[in-house]
Image 1 (tube, helix red, strand yellow):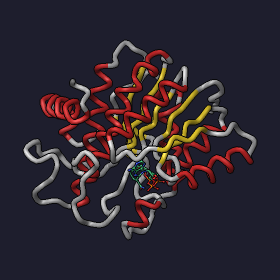
Image 2 (cartoon, rainbow, N blue to C red):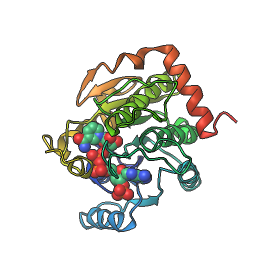
Image 3 (cartoon, protein in one colour):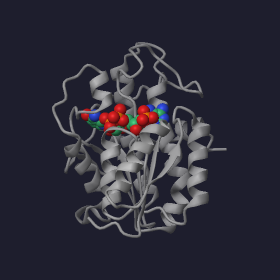
Image 4 (cartoon, rainbow, N blue to C red):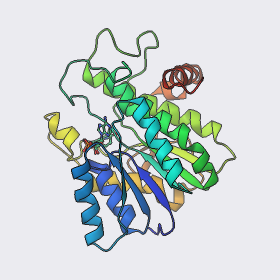
Length: 274
Ligand SMILES: NC(=O)c1ccc[n+]([C@@H]2O[C@H](COP(=O)([O-])OP(=O)(O)OC[C@H]3O[C@@H](n4cnc5c(N)ncnc54)[C@H](OP(=O)(O)O)[C@@H]3O)[C@@H](O)[C@H]2O)c1
């Protein structure tokens, strides 16, 4: 993996699989833009990368449970960087993060939908001009095999809420968005793919859910790096991968009418339609 001269943004890289991916990209020579909420965790990662003799990553702090914060993050990246070769939308919360109760974001959207999907949707759109200017470039949406179809009458899950359903619908929304955006980006030299990195990696999200890990962070991280940098996926777009293998997502991902509804809703909720 050679990433000299490339700039990569990895959201949620202060912990878990994003942290592993950021460190590997820095070791491969990339200028890495790391992101998370916690400045101390970012500092520890930056020191670790520097100690190994690689370029110090640049930290961006943003709580993605606020669309204003996501917008601010994109604006800062656009102002401070002349290119963006890869955008890895990885930040996320699990099905049991912060407990089992339904929670909402700063914008009063269901929290998992907001953090795992809407913020990434907004970031990708706001960063598109830079990604297009840096083509060939790539977007990688870190989704999951846990997928639940969206009920467009109750996307915010005001009835029958469970954390598992909220997580799984946010992950399917990411994949629907991937298929949709790939169409929109045809001819621009920007590809977008989604993946399930690995099942129950040993990360904070899995441990706080009380689940015994069955995969390593390295397994999932290498699958993300494959989509971000692999020669064999160059030019491929709109696909869902299970680890290293191309796979099929929940049927709703291939339902054009459902994707159109999700896109209209997302443009409205993020203020992009205005
Ligand atoms: N673990 C698995 O087995 C598994 C399986 C399938 C898919 N995935 C997906 O892989 C991705 C990474 O998960 P992980 O397992 O590595 O989780 P993790 O160890 O819990 O790390 C999550 C990362 O996201 C950031 N984050 C969480 N909430 C945020 C918020 N409101 N604003 C900004 N950043 C926030 C965290 O930042 P802080 O340091 O600020 O908390 C952290 O850097 C997620 O999208 C997850 O759905 C994981």
